Image (cartoon, rainbow, N blue to C red; front, top):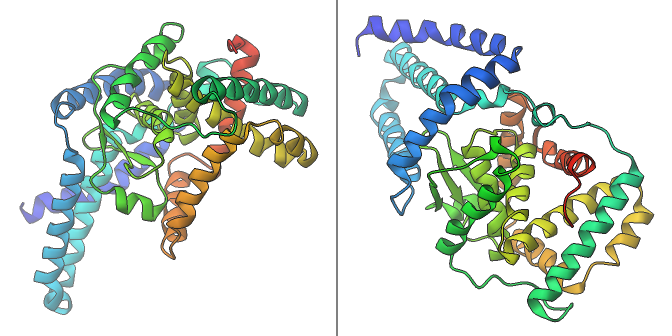
Length: 357
């Protein structure tokens, strides 16, 4: 790469930054021309190219990138004092190209129209509406838990292989998109992450590689979490970057699945999030509702808690803080806390469409 080319790329960074900030003010434009225009085409191409490969090409890409970075640092460490301008320029070039590629291939979805607007949902709901919804969710979760185990004190364990769970996610999206076409999903590219151990250290259940459009699931998390987690990552694949929206879509896809284990995962997910919000509003109601949960469901919650407690480490808060700042920099003002806003989508979607419990 010539010096002139490097300078042109370097100059493009502030232009890119300003252009993205301007586009962020026009979510309808992003929704129409990127999220429902360019992105579906490019994302399907990547899923067709990489989806059939049984391992994560994206993880291998990150491995190679990491090796090249270490190699570059090793080769240039002694030259920092004499060639610091070149080294800074090279670093700036890499950041600029990464920034451009990220937004081109996936990142602009952060600036699309909020889901509550495209679904024409309210934002607010009363505590009474929340409690009523939570009671119905718990009743259904209890029913399915007992249907699966025939014992309300036994936790649910999924009998499927990971590959079977991944294959079954199609059914949920097919059923959900029959009434909500914007959630149609084709060309699966869902895989266990090679770096599941590292994801566990960071405290994450999965992620989407924005450069290959491969959905990655942490293979070490409790198996009963796989259906909703896999469906969540697929929601990212179809262009919903916001975590609260991917949580909602992934939950709804699992809820609409014909498989009872997927349905259980969805009700389990909804009950946990709703109970958390009830606690924030009325701790006494929280205690009352929590007492109605079957002990087997509580054991599933305890299983997840024990898993993450067993993997506590001093680096986890740093990774969480970094991801929180990343979300805030990408149009999610509440950062990681935006995960809790899924309750608003669930309650208000039920108010409008009345879920079939």
